[in-house]
Structures are given as structure tokens and as C-alpha cells.
Length: 354
Image (cartoon, rainbow, N blue to C red; front, side, top):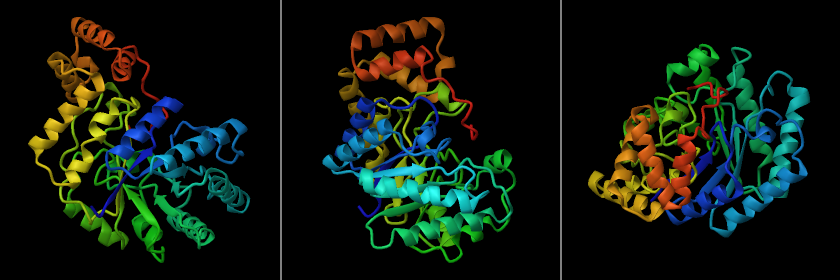
């Protein structure tokens, strides 16, 4: 397989515990994924308070997880969202450089992602400023075997981005790509922020426009938005056929439920292997059986309802029945369903693109 697969922990909402993150990383490494980028929106050290130094506790956490990734054959990455950096470049850019240097030296980071997603444009030539920042970082990384990935403010054609962050400049894509070194990767979520389908034609179109193969940031099965937070996505990946070699890399943004998200994640590699829909569907059921240590048909029926219709489709009796099934399971995945029913994974209003 030519295209590499990875995890981009880039959602809003409740942060994973150490145990959840390591379990997901270990699972991914055994199922065809080769890297894990740590970039949760609610980690203040990478977004809201990105200009502050990493605390001793945070440094220890990232060092430990980096080591865990490497021990499991996974590359480790960090995604930084430098809010407001283009407003005061002279003051803020050196801070960003320092943050990146720290990530590389102290955490043995293999991938640096500079994330301008969900950040408003301050000027009409914001794309030029974003590009220059990324180019400067690229120069600083010269000679180091480190991947650099750039997520633009407009990372899809989806008009929801214009609605929330203002109308994109007509030449925004030209601003960010003109003279951008070809080794700098660009994140793209598909034609929509939540793309139900990503076709080879879609990718060839954006590859041509960006003059490089894009790296997909796949917002399936993530469930951090106002409406998608009412669902648990355990259906297999679909409508992502014949992408191998056309996509440079494919990173998946997982659900807030770190164990349940393994069900969908396990099926993406099969899409790249061009397995049939039937085979992928059967594999999904096998994963459910492994995760819950059961092939309870009623549980699968409820998982399908939560995926397709959401929690509001279950009446009080059904929720009680599902809770009873999960209480008997005594597995981490079953506990996540109980937590979901209890509102633990409630919608975070900070998620603007919902």
C-alpha cells in the first residue's frame, strides 16, 4: 500500500485518559496505521494557551506517550494551533518556534502539524502570512527527518467554513500554495467538513489545485459536533475506494469514545486493500464481537441505531435495555456506552463547525 494511514486526535471535548490513548495507539499500530498526531482542541498547551511553556506535567505526559508510540512502531506527532500568531508576528512567531523546538528536542517528535483550522482570518491576505510561517518552519526543520503538515483555515470547499469564519478570499488557495515547497503536506477533509464520500476524482481535483498529493484529515468517525455528538459511529468506512497512491496520507479523527472508535478505525485499511463491502461489513461485526467479548444481536441492533439515528431514537425502555446489556458486559467499550447514555460525552460549544 502506497498511502500511509494515521490517527489525528484533533477533536473538541473530553480528553482521553493515558490508558485510553495508549490503548488506541496500540490498536492502531496492529491494524495498519503508522503514526499518531496528538492535537486535541481542548489541550490548552496546544491551542488556547499555546504561547505558554509546556508545564512539567504536560512535558512528562508527552514524553511518555511519544516513547509509547515509538515502542509500538508508530511515529509521534504534535499539532499546534497558534491562535492570533499573524496579528503580532514579531512577538508571537519566536514563541511558536520555541514551542516546536521543545517538541522536537524533548519529546522526540516525528511530525509537526501547524493547524490554522477553526481560526478566523484577520486580513484578506491571511493565507500569504500562514504560508510564510509554514515556509519558515520548513526551513528550520531542514536536515531533520520530520514531516511538516499544514492545515489551512479553509480545509474543504464546505460553505459552513465561510459561514463561521467569514467568506474566504477568492484567491485563498493560491495564497497558501504559491511557492510552497512540495514536501510540505496539506490537510484536506474532502469536499465537506464531514465528508460522507471521498472519491479519487475529488482528490485528483484538489491535488491538481494544490500541486501536491494531499493528506486527508478524515472527520469520520469523530462525534464532537452539536448533532454528531448524539451518535456513536461504529459503521465501517465506506465511499473511500481507489484512493491508494492518489492520497499521500490518510489521518483519521477518532470519536471521543476511545474504545468504541476502534470498530470503525479497523475497517479503513480494508478500503485501501479494496475489499468488498460485504467483507468489510463482516470484519466490522468481528471487531464488535472482540471488543465486547460478545456477539449479542440486540447490542449490534442498538449500535446500528446509535450510528444511524442517534440517542434520540431510543425511547426510555430501549435505553434501559441497552444499559442493562452493557452493565453485564464489564468491558471498556460497554462502559463508554453507559457513559454516553449518562451524558459524559456532551457537546462542547467550542466546536464551531458543528
